[in-house]
Image 1: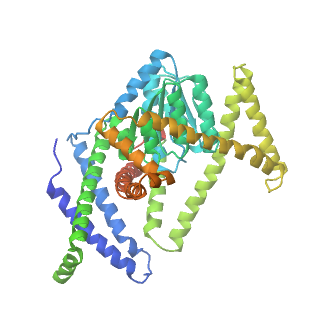
Image 2: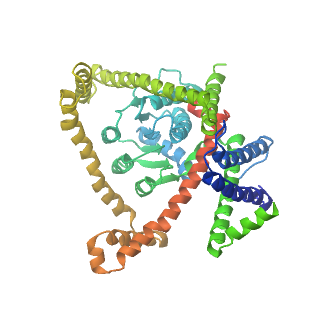
Image 3: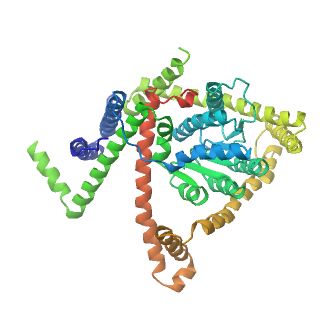
Length: 292
Length: 206
């Protein structure tokens, strides 16, 4: 395992600070014309640096380098949850969020669904996947069907496994509540984008005694999940779930590259706080411009 | 090809959106507008899939004499009624469809929303326990914020509202920003993996 070296962090950090001032100057300038939006140059350069970092570490992972990923108790509990459901003979409910398929959180939720469906197929545990919108329903059906096929289950997918439930979040919550009260799932997994229905669903799961694992990147809903669920994946942990469960080198390399950029951003934020506090920001920029 | 075509479509669609974000021009804007319009059309067609799924599941329950077949029958009846009135009588204000929505569906939605108050209370009762040092800090902070937001808090101590305000504006916002930054980086990484075809589980492939 290699730790991040200062040499890998400082140059991108300095570049980001320079980009901030360039971007600010461009934003204050008169609106330019032309095929390229020059005022978004700093975003483009940051995106290129980020992509380069991710691809660099993917390359290193493919070449055989291993990266340490800290244990995520919520994901380690998935197997425990499936085992509990199998022993009790009760189903598992998986909700891939209440967002549309164009939301990245929904795609992340479907990625986790693939892994969970494979585990439930292996253990022959009933799975229920209620979905709020039709497009995620179609994607979830394909995901579950493929997971079942990979485990040797060739029977047609039961329509009750993945079902479209309403098109409105409170109607969805009401349906989930009824489903939980009648079927009494042993485990409930919530992975995706949620809004006000998060606490309704989580409390209903708590009431029937299900082990609950939640993951979302919505800061407003995280406190509700933390209060009501047994395990919660916060923000980037949720996005890392697919890589964590698959343990594929390319996915783990991408996580490492993302972590490098996080460290870079922390360095930039600290540098900004220090310079703003002591008033060195403008002075350093003036010196840099004079040197150029 | 069957496995590569969806990945190619995902890459091309993502590339169009990236070019539209950084580029300017009539061609770029026209292509991205068409892509977004296509997305709306596909989502509208997919609604038929959802209706088919509902009818399939609940008609199956009725025909197999499921214990909850009465509720399934009510659901299908309401679905047919709303769809029928909406299509044949219109959705304008004052019509039957609008009446059904305003007098039945909207109050039911409000009822579900109102349950949040009770669920927040029960979740808070379970969460705010002084078992460990961090949970005790959480409990004290929650008490300060809750009391600081109501007139009784100011009656008890004049400084409570400003303490509550400081907690909400400084440490709470700082933590939220940290979570947002981390989540944004995670989303960007996931988007890059999807664009490059490394992440394929959403297609049903490992």
